[in-house]
Length: 269
Length: 348
Image 1: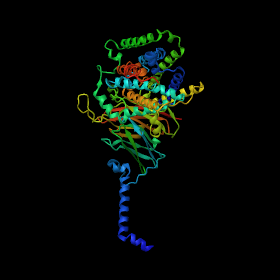
Image 2: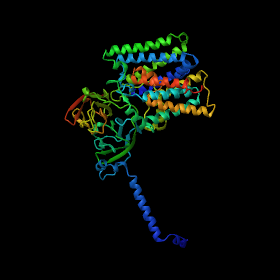
Image 3: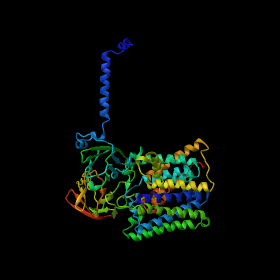
Image 4: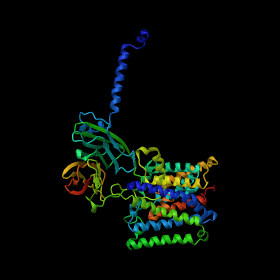
């Protein structure tokens, strides 16, 4: 038996087989690298931490005919306590001219780390979400979206410049103490990417809503930094879990410095 | 219930009514054209004309009082393709006669067990999506870009283009003239006046067009989640339904899919309760090939013309859009070519 083996496989053969097997294994694991590893911005954010994909969910349609406004929901399923809460969620579109879509910051008062928005996707690609908790835990996940030729006609401008920076807010009138309530916000704005040509052929300069802040009785519980990969008429749905009745205030800031504000009262009972 | 869910249920209900009415009254443009030009029976074409008159009156009314804004629909874009609209219509009309009924009729027939319609629907749906977003799509978008046309600026509808006179006066004039001519054509014919089935079919199906606008544009009006303003149409939605069945985990139901499901189920329920359900197939392979080709022609033509006999012939025309007149004219021409003349198809 031993003789048969050593007749067929010399020690050199065994070494070669072992080495090529190890090389194949190494290559294939890097070929199957996570989507976030291939995007510089996401890798920089994660740093040395080992992100888990368990506990973070990114919801996007599999196929979107119109890449200009694709609905996205990101959810990190963890209770938000003062000791341990989701501090931030970052979204990236790997193949957009600027991959950053938005960054969201939470405090425990937000109640849930769950945000719905609409994003711009230039082409079929992978959308990536990275979340960090206050304790330094990191989560990352990704979803592939196929963007096809727009089925129907060329979409004209979807905003009226007369109503620009006009915000709309929907807040439930009442909620139970400590229970997260949904807050819907929308503001009319073209989110001009700086890549579009106007009617006369000149490139329209970039002009976007840069940041959004939501406060409860003056204390900020949800902040968003928006980039040009967010769809026009920025829509943000997030949560608030107030302990007592109070006043919610919302502020949008354009990159030119223009500001829009809105407020709503919420009763706890 | 959220506006989005309300829209879907309303679409399903509209589909149910369409299916039941289609099954009971036999509403069908193909039969109408064949009757009008070949066999001398003018009932079905007048039922279609009645539906169109009701659709125009209803749509212009709800648009005038502000419940919806038809300019948000795809029929009233800022331009249209002067080539693809009529060409698509001709292809659709020809294919429609080839398989003895358009997409909506195929759905109604499927409800009574007609498996020929199943083949037509699958070919239609796949061909439509091939043209919209698939293999033929790049060619379509290139040709559309090269043949774009517009009469002046703004939404390409007759009243809007005549707004120099006065937009309200223009709307009223065009609406009353078109509806009036249609109604005169419809009711001047004695046999039609005594055919309650066809009058009912025309009235009900015509009323479903403004109902569709209200479902998507009024019930579904939500600033935070704007829904596209659509009404009855059957080319893209049939393709969408096939696609939805395959990738439901990664996509959502749309109004069109809800209508398609409703039409099939409504027709099925009506057929079974009237004892008219029985399975039928193809008598010969040649017949199957003819139906498959007809379905594909309808899918491609309907996608190019942005609508079918219902989508452009009723819904599009109800907005008085210029492009819809081209598309609907093309459908009539295509049907005519298939029924009489050198390109006529042998009767089934």
